[in-house]
Image 1 (tube, rainbow, N blue to C red):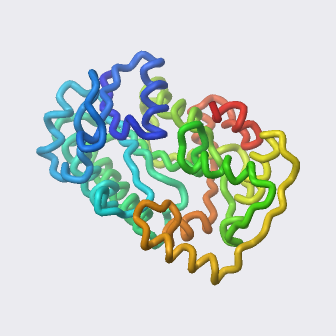
Image 2 (cartoon, one colour):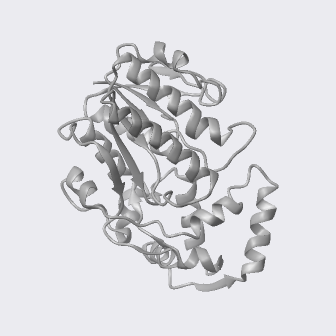
Length: 296
């Protein structure tokens, strides 16, 4: 298949492209012309300004499927979250429906239902529009909602690994207690390959998780154990200081830590992996094996 993969230079997108190409697909990687120099086989895609179907139609010529792996953690002037998560994807989906490119894989996120964060609300808006087009039989989408995605090259994964190396760590209590179900980035890529291969008729929303949930504190402790270190001393940051640190992060656009990050990391992020495991043909990698299998 000829596949347009948006966000191909990102952590998840890079892994997806490698897996799809190994499976024999021809991948046309969408990259922002403002952030990267185009390489052979890449397609300029601007999720800040390409918010009309007309902007996307030329890029869909000859394509058989689209995989959207574009995402941002927080709103910035350079990459406004409303455009990146909602407006540009909606325009892309409308263009797909007009061009007859029915097979869509949307990389969304677990834990967005019921969340008031702009991250969640913009992701949900794109999902709702995609489901509306599917209800009209104009598209056949699969929406993947992964829990915490772990792998080499991921900013959050690097943060977790750095925290796991500390003999003494200070965490917000809400983050320590939140339950997660980490998934290997390679398992997520394998599911996308399956969706564009033997399981092509699978549609709907699919929760992508590892086989077992645990608290974030226990996850960091497991990573530390996998690195061969003894248990660390873990201290809880008082709630007032946690909220103050997040508000300070709000004032620094480059900082990954902010009030929205606190809200997301402080909420449970778990799901039911049955459909995901059917796509893989096996259980996902257990969190206790992530360093050996995904940190490479």
